[in-house]
Image (cartoon, rainbow, N blue to C red; front, top):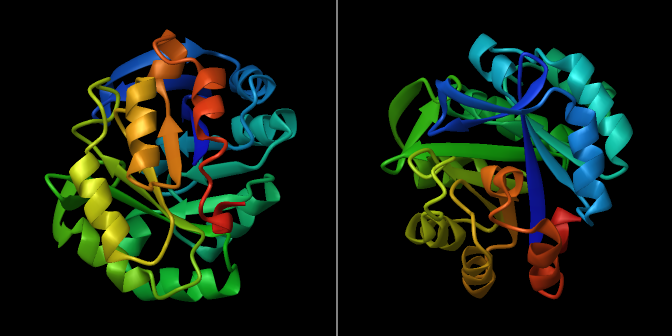
Length: 246
């Protein structure tokens, strides 16, 4: 399994939200690049970044912070939040991003996501954010009538790098991920599934390994110190079954 420490950006600062609620944000650092260096120094070999302002605005916003992160981290960076056009994609790649996460755009125009993934093989990640199994969009401000698994199945015909599956109800709540829906997603598609939301203990990480989930994003637990990154990495380094995440 690969672990992705998370850096969520709001107004250029490193924050965490609870259940995707912008009004429930906690600022952990005003220097996201320093946070990226911290995670890399602890052994992380990839970092997950979310442009929360971008997700809300519908286009990437925190360019200065993202460039600083990619320059400081020294490891590949995965970015989501507001990437919805070819120009957006070109911009974030120019910022040094390795993988671009497409979420809202996948629901509104899945054919564009498929075409884009064909142009940028193994550099596009499908971001599936769900509430009660249904896709949430627009920075989690809206919930659609489309089931998360159905969207992933439709788009997974393309050469995507992975699918990031986030259960909004679990995100930032320190209550554990939605293992059942993760396993359902794992079994429904032939792509690596990256778990996001609620992972906060070594036992959660261990169960994800047992369930053969090849990737895991961890946020609040690392910032609040309830989960040690080095310990989690040690637990997962021998369990990396899918080399498409390299």
